[in-house]
Length: 160
Image (cartoon, rainbow, N blue to C red; front, side, top):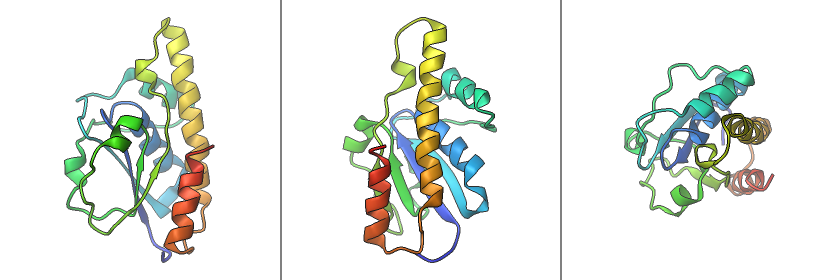
């Protein structure tokens, strides 16, 4: 890939927690080299308070969050599509223009964690910190590498 701004789309089913956190984190650490996007196959219609709280606690602005459908991006090329939940990874995704690289980073959904509020907040923070590690590594990738190598590296990030 040439040296240009990369469009990265993070997908979850509801686009209310993990994908929202990933979008905000990439926007914060990716600088002008990346355009961070997020969407869901069945958007929840809201951004979960746990995601907003975890990002705030990490010093990351979520801006004006909006739970979006992946249909919003179906006609615009993206470079990378990363699914963050197993159910979204198993769904048949739209055919994205530009033949993006796909990767799956399986992460638990903080919105589904059961327990006292403070425990749920800490759980969401742990998931957000794992995402930050992965996203920082994504930013550090050699984007001039060939497609096969980039796919391998992005999939490897799903394992950390």
